[in-house]
Image (cartoon, rainbow, N blue to C red; front, side, top):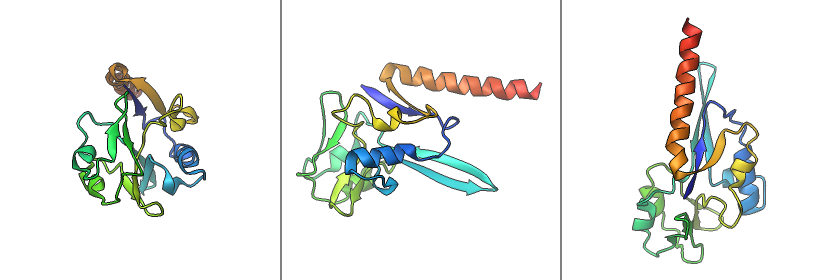
Length: 161
């Protein structure tokens, strides 16, 4: 399986990823309808960003609590919501540890990132011009994150000397 990896140091908080997601999934550029969100806060004139999206858990709580069986895993282990089966009960919302699934108020069904199922790659990754998002195989995720942390550490220590 492949996963989306987010590099907060490269992310500008521009929300292009949200715009592309909402366009691909809902047919309109409306970040409110995106499956992945960039939560932005400002404290003491510093912009902080956190990306919230489905982690494609190996043992997903959302799938376990869904009373209608609307959340399933496809052949690549990507968790998919069947909108025809979903009853909009919000059990999945309460069960998700990262808040990455929500009931769409207009449709009355749960929506979440499905890694752009059916497309070659997630469109948020494709259109991220800073390359803050990468689509990597599981075995590369840990290595990529470790390398980014090491580079940041080296950068910080070289500035001190």
